[in-house]
Picture 1 (cartoon, rainbow, N blue to C red):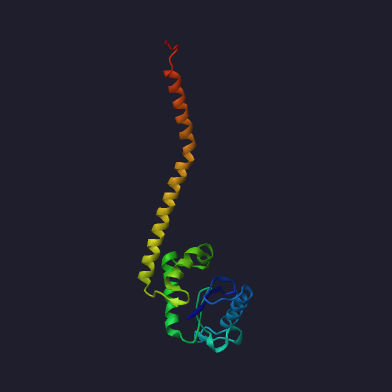
Picture 2: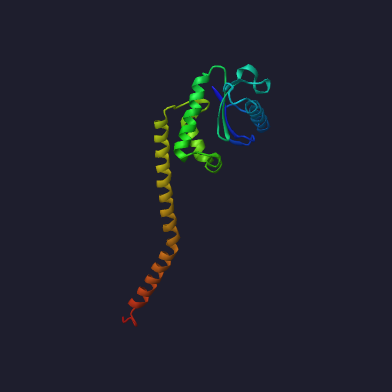
Length: 190
């Protein structure tokens, strides 16, 4: 099971955090700092797999990571997960981000955090891997984007209708008043 997905920059600032096991916020911050400390001090030529420290749950935690440019992508998993499978999953995640953002960079993760979380949810839910086929993931993301755009168009149409409603109501009242005064007879004979 995947216990956490962490993305942070070379200075250790978290850019994406997703925990699938419950931690209090202080504990989450401690995990992020510990993981960054463990991963960042490693040589570039070292293996991308690490055993978790005692602060992370001991031997049950494994850290699988990739370092791309200024970002570390770290998946914290239990001992039942395949290290190579998770390493491939990191590659799928990064390539999907790259296709969605056209050369993904750290700023994309900061300013489009909702979209990044949506992509992550297409890949992994509740700590379980859901999809590894990038074309399937992109198809779902594209359909979601189209749905969001159509909903945004519907909302703007409703807003324009609602904003013009008082003017239309006032115009209708004036028309009723003017037609009522024009049709009234001068004197009624009995």
